[in-house]
Image (cartoon, rainbow, N blue to C red; front, top):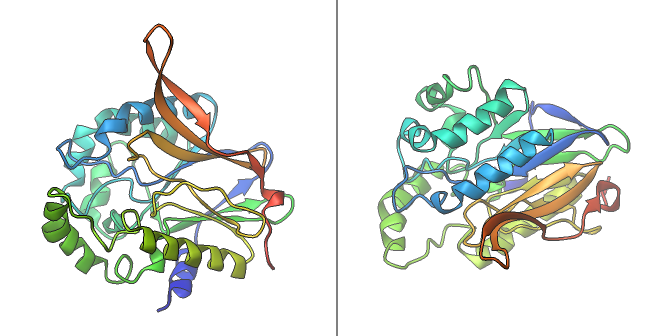
Length: 286
């Protein structure tokens, strides 16, 4: 199956949410929540993430996670991840109780698709939760729908052959990375692979006449008139976390980071990484 067909399959029977001027969505991806050890890349930004979630909950946003929320290639137990990051999952549970939470799976947490044990770990806080491969925001005005998925479908090793790649990450690349070597199979750590992935995702968006937003590459970007593809970035950047806000049918790429006031007091800031763009300004091709 080629990348375009794998992407198409991600949206088969995907749930839909309304995209109107009054709808508010915030899109995060690639949190890679771990077990609190030295490999847990989420740890350094967990307080930023908590501040961001409290802000979006307070302002009425629906939270959508585009996959790789939990690091289940390097770690075997979802229960341990939830125990370590209980405060984070308590925040997410607030959204869930108010029907403002949607979770997609990526390659690093793909076992949520079929593993009863992984889903069972969510049951106490998220009863009857469902994990999706894709989600569609249906435009209520001009039919410029936004398609959401993780983005790993462009790569054979990260989609169809994910068990092989998980084995390599868990037993080969993980230990080697601790010694300074980078995983060449990772779109987030290999710039050449990152560019190829972005090109394929942009091509799919053009061919299908839609706006596509993914994670996976960890490189935050907002689309242009000729390339209706966007990326949320990740929550494991060394300088902070990034996400995409959708409000008034417009997209805003945002960074949350720690800054210092003149009196040396640290505070969490929300900063726009790019100009807000209306979805009507993103060209679709059908």
